[in-house]
Amino acid sequence: NDKVSSKKLANQILIKSLKKIISHSKTKKIKIALETEGSSLKYNYLMMQKPNEFKDLFKIFPKNLFLNLNIAHSNFASKLYNFSLINFIKQFKKKIVAVELSCNDGFHDQNLPIKSNSENLKYLKYLKNIPIILEFRNTNFQNIKNSIQVLKKNLKND
Image 1: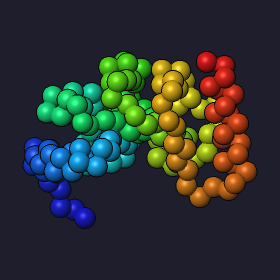
Image 2: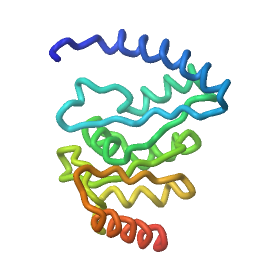
Image 3: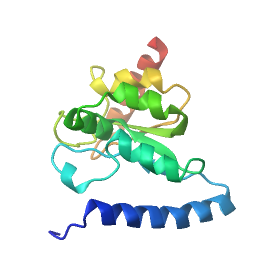
């Protein structure tokens, strides 16, 4: 809807919620990972897009909070906020426990199957041994198989 909270209030709610979630996750011995965000269209409504947002959050939660790096989202954010996604990956590598991978047209978050010429593939060489989640919408099994082959070939070449 049109009701938008201030970023300060949203951040306070995030921290309060994470305190509860992380406390519970410790008792269950599970990791909590926040997905990185970024959008060319809805960036004003999103948190957790910029490096300093993660840096500040990891000061509060240094041990029990991790990242699910959505490469497409973070690629949008890096272009919009003018930061190096490679430097972001290097800065937070120890916190990244999962990677989401998909393709798009460079403007819309379409979650398309992986193409061999995808810009998003170039970041994988910095993310070795981290589980990769293929996140696609409205695709068929053949596209999934093709994407896996592209991914395997890319990982083999790195």
